Amino acid sequence: MKLKKMVMLAAFACAVSTAAAQELPRKVSNVEVLDLEGKPAKLPHWGEKNLMIFYVDPDRHKQNEEFTEELEQNHRAQGDNLYGFGVMNLKDAPFVPNGMARNMARKRTEKNGATVLADQDRILSTAWQLGDCNNQFVLMIVSKEGELVFLRKGELSEADKEAFYEVIEQYK
Image (cartoon, rainbow, N blue to C red; front, side, top):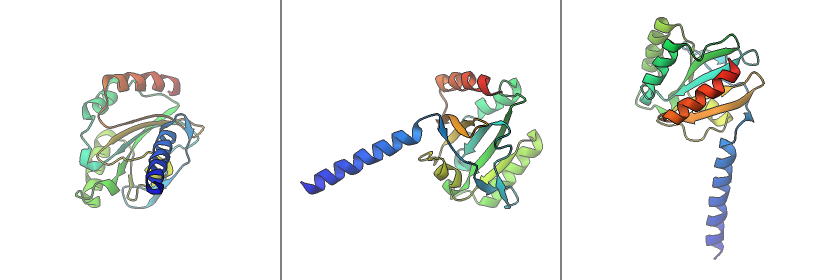
């Protein structure tokens, strides 16, 4: 009987912590990850601009590729108060060597001028309580005030895209 109660209590605690982790908006803090040269780097423009962050597992870097290419072309997520960049979730990509992932990112940044950082130890996902980001494309918006106001993981549905565009209009 005690075991059954303990299991139920543990399941309830997990459910509550997962639910709490997904509540928005919520305060998050700037974290230190790495630049593409492997040097420590804080998230750019923290507290100065609203941030649109792509937190991508290199194993699934093409997940939502059509959406990201469309964003680049349609300029709907650009504005003076918004800064967009990518963070590679290297810890969840054990079969993609870090050097290879960084080289791929360097080539992409040369092409589009984007900023890309590297998270080798799930620093961002842990600090921000994002939950499991393995094999996920994670799209986030963080306000100048340091609040995570938008979060979607995985393949984006049409509803997710519409919600993103609605939110982004408030933060451009």
